[in-house]
Structure formats: C-alpha cells, structure tokens
Length: 304
Image (cartoon, rainbow, N blue to C red; front, side, top):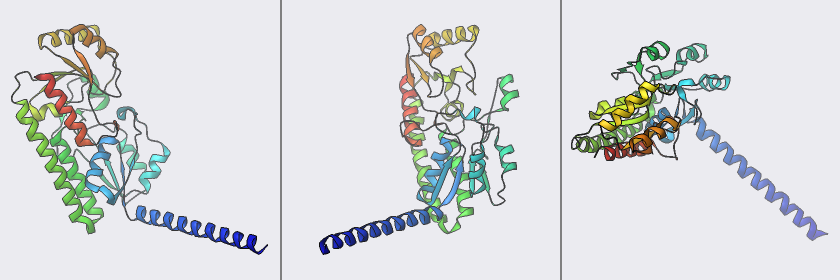
C-alpha cells in the first residue's frame, strides 16, 4: 500500500514538474515574440527582404499565401486584424498591391508605419494600354532586380530603425551585409553578361524588365506583365519568329503561370523549358539571394 502511494505521489510530482516547465517554456516563447517588432508584409518577396534586415528581431506575417497570385489577391478580415496590431506594414508598390490604399484607410492603427518598398526607385512604364488602364502605369516587379531589392531593403531598414531605435546598429549591419551580397552578385554577372553578344531571352510572364535594365538584356514573353490570358495567334506567331531569329534555346516558365503555351512554343522552335523564379511565393524553401543567383545563372547560360 505504502509503495503504491509513493509511486502515485511521484507520478503527480512528475506531471506537475513537466507542466510547470511547459508553462515556463510557453511563457518564454510568448515573451520573446512580444519583444520582436511585428511586421506585416504583402507577399513573399517582401518577406525575404524584411527577413534579411530584421532577422531574429522581427516577427513577420505574410498577407498573401504562397501559391496565390498577388495581382489577384483580395484581403480578408484576418489580414486587417494582423495590420491592426502590427508596427510596420511593408508592401511593394508600383501598383502590385492595388488594394493597399483602401485597406490602410480601414485599419484602426494610428501607430502603423507603412513602407512602400519601391519608393525612391525609378519605375518602368507599362507599354500595354489595356494593362495601364486596369492595373496602373508601372511594371511592379522591382524586386527581381538586385539594384531594386537594395533600395527596397534600405526602406525597410529605415522603418525598423524608426520603430526600434535601440537596435539601430543591428539593422544597419544586416542591411550592409545584404547590400554587399547583392552588389557582389551584380558585379559577377555584369561581367558575364558583357561577354555574350546575344541579349535576348523568353519568359512565360513579363516579370523581368528590371533585371533586364540592370544588365542591358531584353525579355520577350508569352504573357503580359500581370500574367493575364494566353497570347493571340498573331502574338504567338511573332514569338515563334522571334525565337527562331534570335536562336532562343530556352523558354523560361514561372511557378504560378500556365506552361501550356510555353511548352508548345518550345516544341515549335526546338527549345527546352526551364523553371525560373519570380519569388512571389516561397519556392523550394530557397531565399532571395539563392533564387536570384539561380535566375542569373540560367539566363546567362541560355545566352552563351
């Protein structure tokens, strides 16, 4: 009897101990999260940049789920709730998040700092009149540019310092480290692209204009800047002729764009189809620099 009682008491003590430890662990996790700067970002590319600068000092919430086309996103009540408790909201701008102004007006958070990440960069104008009327005058894909991403990172850095000045040196160091890696990658491929005479490549989605501006390249695409609709028979004929004339060996396709037309085009001109990153969603758990390095390497190899 005494032995059974002793075992029972020991069991109770063990449960209490584990419960206490679990509670302390949960409390510690909560405190750590509370001590971080809550940052809401519009989509994955903004998350990548905010993570590079904020690292373990930020708690990031991404509004647009992976696999969702950012151009077509409609914010929901939970997104407004996230913004109501955030310190910083980072969005791309240049018309990428057409809903941003409306959402920000409806959020009850007077202390929210809004970062239009593309502010201070020179935009590329849309050339398609229908797209310009529906989506605005600018191509929004600035982050697919090493120079563009560097400016976006600077804007995020400044916002974090404004909210959390005690960690100013930390954010400045992270920005400097990130900027150095961007510059190093730019310099490496700037030299490489200067060695090739062919500057033309073809993508499924016209998202690479800013990358082209960085390196003096030219993209042609199956779908428009906002990835809407298949090309007309006339456009497809022009693309086929373009590929043959410029000896295009690779048609690049993206995660969230249908490959049907790209596959047919590649077959027609004797090219291969390769996946390229737009970084709008998280792809294979790769970070921004890894994706951009792979993009540049694939484009360069297709031009050699």
